[in-house]
Length: 342
Image (cartoon, rainbow, N blue to C red; front, side, top):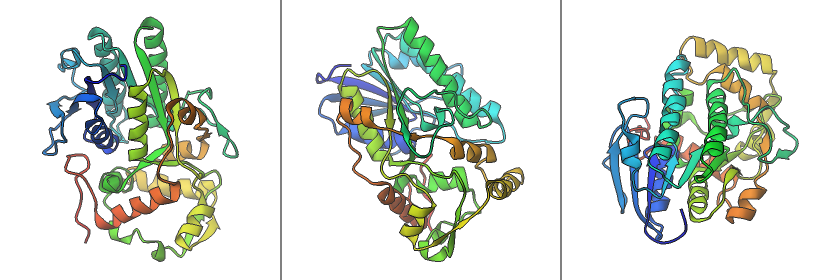
């Protein structure tokens, strides 16, 4: 897609955490003529220039090529995090569904594909220095999320080889948060036993300091701006996206006024595994293992080639998200449906 006016953009997963931000940004862009949001359930919410189509990517009956016909670009965001106890189910949606998207992009001859990859696609790497986009993307094999993201990186390698005429962009953001995603992410990762109103810094006498637990975050709206900029330019390939600084126990302790207390990896993992095996915690211990090994990302390429700068710092992202947890915040879509705090 060029930056000429009148662009028609299709967004999969348009009602989720990233999708709602991307749709909003694109609907406000004067160079975008129309946005077609794809989701399993059509929401009541509808920004200007936006139409909706009900599509289940896991279904072989979905005629994606017909939906993509005439589009200037497809932004592929759709992703299922659950059920974590049934990796075959997430594989059907995330991997097989994504392959259907790639095939439909080719069949409809869409000139641009922007794919939501992730920091989770990266192989284990350093925590003391950032790595650029050339770092291997083989994921952490025990975590379904990482396996699926890494597999799709290989699928896109083949897609790009076979279809050099299609401009492919891979976004690799850090962990994404915004106020409106709080209720959804609480359900996905914390489960029903994490009371939102208790997400208050003053209630934390200490913070567990697990070796290796150092990660990056990003406001979802800042990620959406990177997607918009990629659509307006002629860039190709992968882009790391993250806010500064990296988040660790020291930073959280300073934010919350709490004392970090060293907790061995084995003790933390044992507790998470026990809760997950009892179906008390949706987030799996395998994902915890992956987070401990994910590298920190260097975002120089996004700054230089896209002109991208995140507007929110990591502490600002976390503070906004915690406020959303306490308030039961959400958005008027099925995935982001809020829960009234009690």
